[in-house]
Image 1 (cartoon, rainbow, N blue to C red):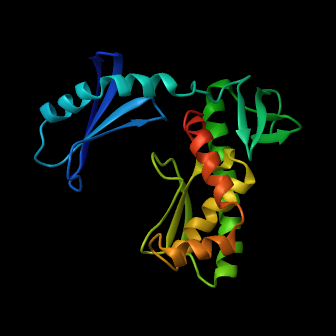
Image 2 (cartoon, rainbow, N blue to C red; image 1 turned 180 degrees about the vertical axis):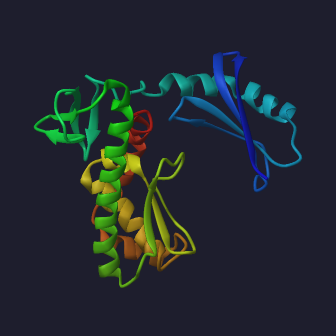
Length: 233
C-alpha cells in the first residue's frame, strides 16, 4: 500500500519541505519538485529506506535549491490578486453586498458572500468552468475521431495535464481553465486520441494532428508557463 509523510529538513541549500512517498510501483529512489506547494518529493520503492532517499537529496542539494528558487511566486485566491482565466488576466474583487456567487465582469472576477469563503468559492468556480470547457472540447473531438469517452472529470493533478484510463474515462487538471484556449484544445485532443491509441506512436500523433493544429505551440506554452499555473490558488 502506498503511503506518504512530510517534514521540513535543513538541506545545504536551505530549509525545504520534503514529502516522503513509498510506492509499490517504484523501482528506484527518485526525486522531483512539486510546484504546487514548493515541495521536494522523494519516492521510495518498497524495500528502500530513508537513508537512500537522504543520500539522493544530499547529492542533488544544489539542484533542489535552484529549482525551488526558480519557482514562480504563489498566487492565492484573494481580493486584489490577478489570476488567469482562459488565458486572460482578471483581478479578484470581493463584493460582499451583492449576490450571485462568482462571476466575470469586464476585467474582474467578482465574488459575493463572506470573505472567509472567498478562496473556496473562486476555486469552485474555476473547477466548474474547467469541467464545462473540457467536456465541451471532448464532445467536439470525439465526434470528429469517431470514438466515445465514458466520463470526463477534472482534478488537481500533480504531474499531468490530462489522462486517459483503460475504462475510457478522461481526466484533466482543473488548472487548464487558466491556460489559453489553444492549450486547452491541444490537451483535449491529446487525451481523445488516446481513446483510439493508448500509446504515443506515429498513428497516435497523426490523429492528434487531425484533431488540433496547436500541438507545437501548446507544448511550448505548457513548458514555459505551466509551472505558474500550479502556483495559483
